[in-house]
Amino acid sequence: MKRTTGSLLGLLLALFATQGMAEGVLKLSRTELKLEPGKPAHALYVENTGDTPLYLEVVQELLLNPGQTPERLVPIQEVERPSLLVTPDRLVLAAGQKRRMLLKEIEAPTQPLVWRVTFRPRERIHINSKALSAPLIVSVGYGAVIYQLGSSD
Image (tube, rainbow, N blue to C red):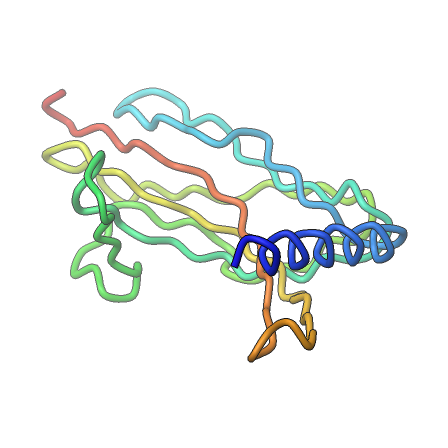
């Protein structure tokens, strides 16, 4: 088993080395934000530092059990009265382009909330190998955590 894992790791590294010439590279301005009532929100920027376009899907989820494993995440569409909205939920960034995400605080919550925002490039890497019984798909996501403090904090 160890030899197969080593072979697979070598295959992945070789694949990334050969495909790394032209690609979009996502950079977030920050990975943690704190929203406090009455204070201006910090900006969240996404930037493509690569040399090809990036097609991103943005997923916002409410974290119900911060600090616990496994995490219990609720998609924004299933939250009854969300107090924060992060938009857009899809975007395209050209090479070198930078864009500010809109953080719209609808209302201050009564207790602190933790939101996870994940940026997923729509590009996936498929690996087919004789060492694998099924194709391996690698999909990388980049995330930010937003702490939304309540009005009574």
